[in-house]
Length: 166
Image (cartoon, rainbow, N blue to C red; front, side, top):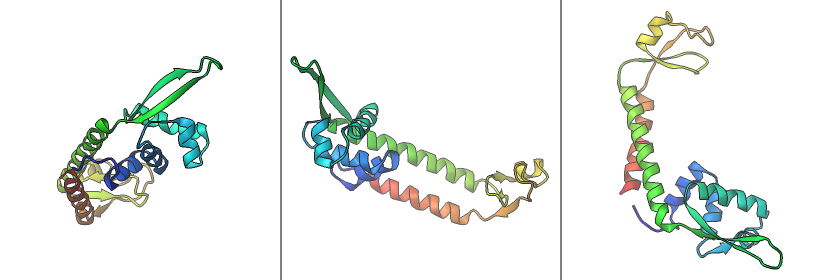
């Protein structure tokens, strides 16, 4: 995986985990800046930028230095992007997602699955038999589901993530 923070992988992961606005803010931190300066540059309200920065701070992707203005008594915050943490965050996120997808693929490959008409449930043969092939939520019959498409979609997503990890 590339270590640069200005790549599409960073944008993709942060957009999936957070929002496009978070990506915009973290990219605006190519050098340390005050939250008011970021807000002015991005033409956003300072309160919105602070919320986004705090979200990123919770994930340990940004940090700040706080200083007090002796005249006003107000604190100002100088925000910095944590380039050292971004690669690790992306790696951990992709590893976790890959593990989840592999688990889902194993479940799909393990026997016949059934769906009801409300699509709230996707159940195994054993579960369908326990409820006499009736969905307890919508009272419709469970119908055997073809999991080939689901498996193909999972396999495709697994390959995409494995490619990103290289």
